[in-house]
Image (cartoon, rainbow, N blue to C red):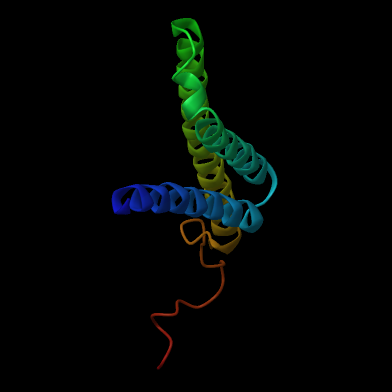
Length: 127
């Protein structure tokens, strides 16, 4: 009884943590990353719902149905990972692009600077 309770707490607890983390990420991001995270959230919820609704049903199903169920679960799991990795890659590229744009604005071209002709050499000026 206690082991079953712990199993259910861990199962639902992981669902709450995963869905919560993806939802917070979707709220805090913008544009393409948000779309990918929302898609990952939908796939995650669908995968958990599928595993919660159909486990007893599989015990009386035939082999083809069990294979189809396993295939759908595998595709949803892989899809979830692909969407989350895609969101991370798109987010990293967006951040890198914005950082490069900021760096281009802040950089001073020190290599191209030359002292104007006719101006005194600053090394010769008195302190």
